[in-house]
Length: 368
Ligand SMILES: Cc1cc2nc3c(=O)[nH]c(=O)nc-3n(C[C@H](O)[C@H](O)[C@H](O)COP(=O)(O)O)c2cc1C
Image 1 (cartoon, rainbow, N blue to C red):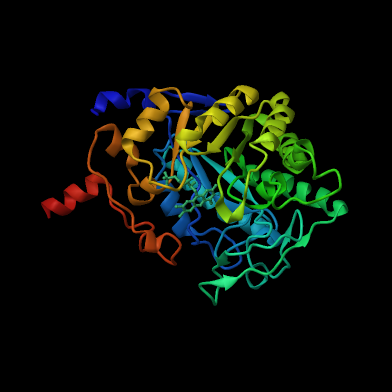
Image 2: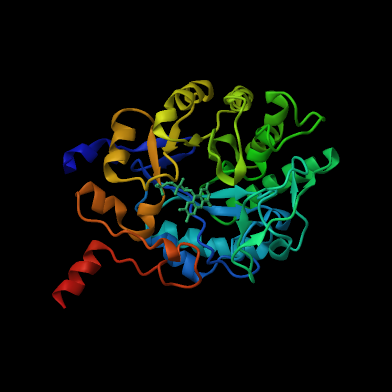
């Protein structure tokens, strides 16, 4: 493929109130570089600003309340200090010419009381059976069984998302993305193998979709539907999630949310599962961002194919942005790329985070 093949990725696109200058977006990537209390810092501002040429940056998942903090050194949007820390990040991204939305997160049964200081909660008391998690002291801590959230606690969870969304706008974000993917709290409610509830938030596809619907409505009410995106991952088995209903909860979710007119739908699903993706795109009737999942790192050919073949309006790329802060320049000119070291994805400090060079920096080094 040549530089010409890339032309469709360089077309601008409107996502609700956000106009992006190109369709090579940066997918959300947890990197564990925040301060211990979840406050974003100068290192994070440098990392995100380096990647400002992405059409849109979706921030790493950011917990809305401490109860939903799954891993050490992940950022929050639950306090004024978090808001002020994020302000340095959004200012740096905007000064570098970029756009950034905050991914709003609650881990549910994924996490550890040693990390959050709170007991784990989920749709039901269904434990993770095989998975272990990182804590500050252990690389592979077994995960205790969660407690089922009571019906009267759910309005508080919904309100936490809306509060975090307001804080995100106060922090200078261009919008938010609700994290309904990858086996975290909202996905736990959607999935029949974790959601065994017999109140109005379980049972039928509509019941299982209800918490995500209420969160999306509350966030849209707080900051505007045109600044609210949603990420889902139908069929992704991350964190022991199963989809034996063939996607019926996702269909119910789409039908309930379509009237809202959200800014975009972001789907993580392998391209060979494109039948359901295409159906959901139709049901939502809003722009679609696509990411093909964890199995293989998205490469240039796949990014081009997703947009050129019209599978989606834009592609969200994860790991290639880690090793290549100037990924847009590299892929648009078909230049070589750097393979990021996976051992440093979740490590502490600047190594493997802000030290990947741009093409221009590589040239300078070669000339020196
Ligand atoms: C280090 C790492 C952290 C991730 N963190 C998040 C996250 O915070 N939120 C999310 O929705 N997906 C997360 N993902 C999934 C990515 O957004 C993306 O879907 C995945 O990496 C596959 O795309 P790729 O092949 O382009 O990397 C993460 C993936 C990786 C590798």
